[in-house]
Image (tube, rainbow, N blue to C red; front, side, top):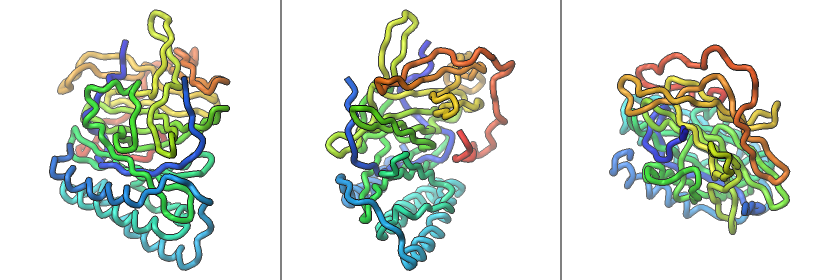
Length: 346
């Protein structure tokens, strides 16, 4: 049963238009907001592209006292803008706050050694670091309407001078694409709110697993594991590192993992350091619920997993634990604004 349909609409957390930044390193080589919104945002994205440099230099040093004071002032403004992006009641104001947040963040990151500043008060923006700290990823979402979210982000390289590689969310153009096998670029990215990064080291080079949330639609949410590699210094998303089996026992590979589930459900998809595996809920199909467009998927209390092999690939395990929960985990219904804490532990 195919529980993870490729494609894309939107809903669940506020919706964004994206930009992000990543590092250079070894290359792993495995065998609509409204149209007017789109037009308004693209110049901002291109401004970030103009600032980008794809070759890492020496790592950033310590912030001076003057730089630290200046970054603290920037953070105050960014925190207010981020709050407006998530909480303002009007779409136009949320979009304007998003645009201002992009420009102010870009301005702040121009400060020398800004990579060392943690932005701890910027609670509406997720900032994730890989184990090697060669870069960090800023991501956030903009809520457009009940079926529309856009994602923004930027990856900042760990260098004294600003180096950015923008990520541009084009998920609204991927309805007919098989997302589990597609290879994507930074200017055609499936945008998500990144909540974890897992660095994987192999003899052929490093790659990074990016765990993300997609608000998708009012009744349906998605979680995703994307694979980040670098080819000629440029980020590439998607690599066939997940090995699975079909119902006939035939092996096949996937370039990313995608779970689609009911907005009423709480679904796990994350790396578990205790078990040293990627654990995720097994989902069962239920018939169309009142008001939904089609079948919905709910966890049944059992777990599936991917375990890393010596070959640097993740091998599928159909069942991890023998115990089965009596009832699947179902949280309280969404409130009238359909908003949740974006950074609640996944």
